[in-house]
Length: 105
Image 1 (spheres, one colour):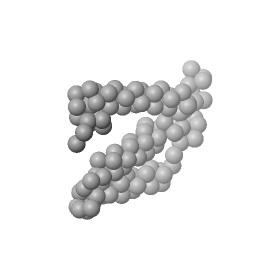
Image 2: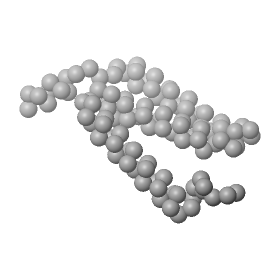
Image 3: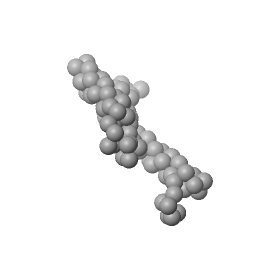
Image 4: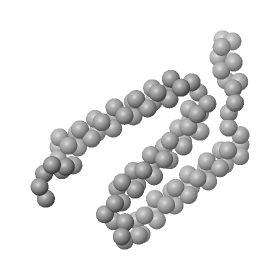
């Protein structure tokens, strides 16, 4: 029980850090909405939105889920699960033809 108390007494983000992260998340959300209204970005809209979404997820996981201040093994477990899930989704998309990387146009 003492080890748990010592672990939770470690440094965490201040209230101003949470407000700054919230502001950054709001700005990223505005960028995501703005991408839809810029005509020349239509061909690369999906990669842009994926990068912006991944950035938002990382910020939320690091600060609001406190992964930045937890043990590194917890971050590794979460990251491993995400990589495996992304690989399965990509494989299913390739299998069922949602992605046509090798098919002629």
